[in-house]
Amino acid sequence: MQQIALDIGLSPAPTLDNFFPGPNATALAHMRQWSPIGAAPTYLWGPEGSGKTHLLQGLRSRLHQQGHATGYLGAQDAPPMGAAPDLLFDDSWSAVFMDDVHAYPPALQQTAFSWFVQAQALGLPVLAAGRLAPVALPLREDLRTRLGWGHVLGLDLLSEAQTRDVLRQAADARGLVISDEVMDFTLRRFSRDLGSLMQLLDAMDRYALQTQRALTIPLVKSMLENA
Image (cartoon, rainbow, N blue to C red; front, side, top):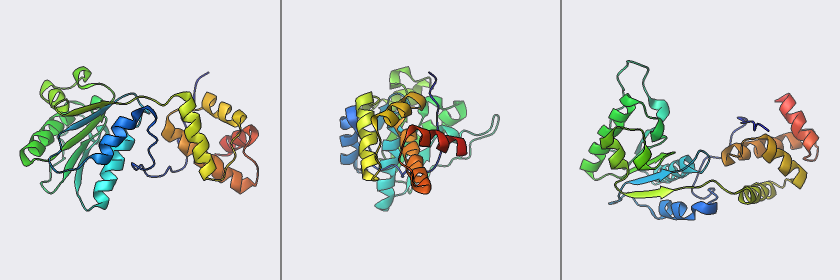
């Protein structure tokens, strides 16, 4: 059965505290212990939904709360075809973040390489993430090799049992009772990306409160029909 990707509602902002590590405890521990002072480059890789972006955004948020400025380069920052990139490096940054590097087009690869070189010259750390290990990235060689210079950490998807545990804990925290039947229905019909599932849980919680009904499969279907 084809799973449905749901984009509804607003999920809580990613932090290191609300990241459920599952098989990725080593990556979470690395990000918790990370310091911008003298840090080597860090590269996270793994399949979509394994938590790479969550960890990058969580650490970046923590740095901002501590008063640090950071640079961020995502695949969505690519300029229109034929246009020159307008993404300037800032010497006031304390760290540089690069996400979805596997999807960087040539113009963005040039920007990323330039940022990496300037960051290294100033002693600033680079934290990056992509779906593939550095050796397999379809990038220009000088950028690809630099992404593998420091800490390289592979992430895995949560198992179904771990995903169920996370959903149940999140439901309990909301005072929401989620039955095995609703859990089975949710995992069969929707994307198992944890971020999407948390958004779905938020939406179900709001709809159950609005309608003053218990969380059941008919309620989830009604919510989708009225979305």
